[in-house]
Image (cartoon, rainbow, N blue to C red; front, top):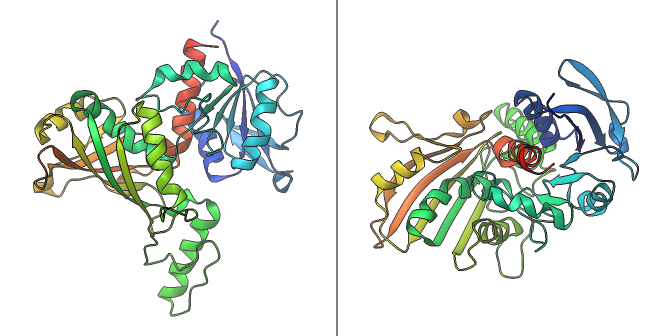
Length: 339
């Protein structure tokens, strides 16, 4: 009889937590028990899993007894406090916040890119799930880096409001309705109107002029690819899209990489779907990626301004591959090889 595992979902009532439950069910993860954990605001709520209504429990220090794997998506402060508690209780934590990503003892894992790093969970009992925009980019860049060695990355992101949470989804929906009916739009989640607008501002600004989101892409990319020499610069933009992040990625490589070779490498790469037939207006789009687990890559073309340059357009569902699915894939590696 195959083994089953007790799984806790921390932050179960949030946008990513809900997706984690869906992905666990869709992928037929070997679950014995699912324990739903959230703040006291969610006490009394029920969520469905495999046809059953499961109660949401209040997260506390005793929440992890008997848990094998804890999937966290409850924010950085909660993860900082409760991941060590869960690990001490015997659970392996897969954390979706930024709390542990740059800890040198904590692996930062994208299963298609660096699955071997999962073994490092033994250091602290924690595995970090990368930033959503970083995940989809490194999935697309890994096969190209292996072939031609990427030396520089310039990325501009176009990120959906669902990356901020359900309250941001509601704000975009409400603002669209208000504006289309001739009424002013009220902004509570973002510093400016997001409907019919683009905000070059994700997370807080740092002293170097970059935002925290932009520096996450810089630092996380180097750690995941295991190459501190890669130069990365990012501009991250919030756009009025509900689901799926899009990215314009420009790379400079050590050796020549033609567009044809890049298509060949990407077509064979795990987790990637090449969508690139511009003659028929076929390219990755947010509306097509929503609800999917693949990373879609198109607009593959050589950068004519430099000798070894390539341009890509990369799109993925930020709640699924950018968060929930990546976390569950990490859990699958754990049960397959380590637990």
